[in-house]
Length: 129
Image 1 (cartoon, rainbow, N blue to C red):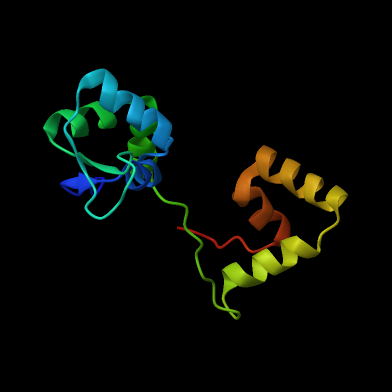
Image 2 (cartoon, rainbow, N blue to C red):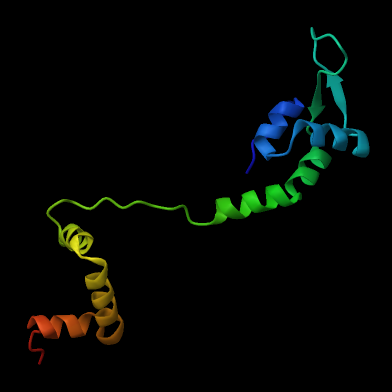
């Protein structure tokens, strides 16, 4: 969930939502969102937007925010650490040393026969009874 503060400048909102400050200011005028001036800043253009339920609901239903929410719900990419002496590490290190042709041949073998076929070819199959 986004961390909206009760009052935010257009710049702060733009960093949080991905929209430009100009787009946010346009929505302030269009939808009549409440604003107040920043104390001590001259020019009348410096203001904060009161982030109430209407503002929050509108922003959360925009395409950029919906896509951002869906991306957050997806499983994050993970990089799994493998110990240097583990079987997984040895397999990965060995696979990286193969040529492209060897990789394609191994891929075809795995695809056609599966791991069982490789185990049989290596003579590692145990008798199960």
